[in-house]
Length: 111
Image (cartoon, rainbow, N blue to C red; front, side, top):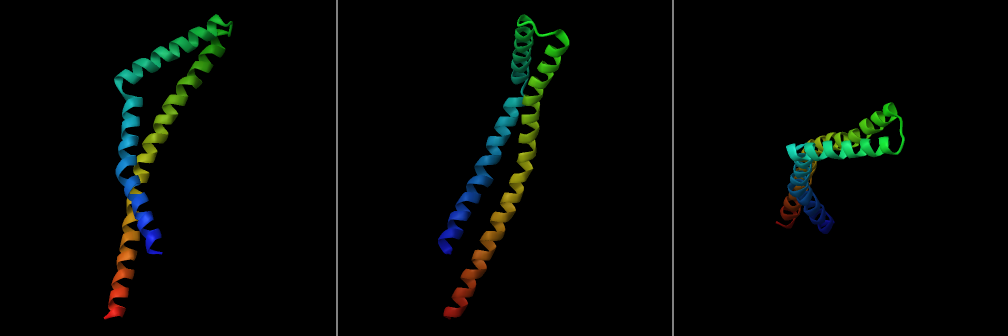
C-alpha cells in the first residue's frame, strides 16, 4: 500500500510540476505573433490550393474557416487544461496528508 502511495505521489509530482509548463509553452506557441503569421500563411495556402483545385469560392472560404478553427479550438482546449492542474495539486496534497495520518497512526500504535 505504501509503495502505491509513493508511486501516486511521484505521478502527481510530475503532473503538477511539468505538465503546466508544457501547456503554457504550447499555448504561447499557438497564440504568439509568429504563430499567427504562420497560421495566416497556412490558411492562405490552404485556400489557394482549394481554389486552384476548382473548389467554388464560397465552399473554399467555409473550408478555410474550418481549417483555422482547428488551431483556435486546440488553443482553447489547452487553456482549459491549465486550471485542471490545480485539481491535481489538491489531490496530491490530500494523498500526502492521508499517508502522513496513516504513518502517524502506525507510530502511535508502536509506542
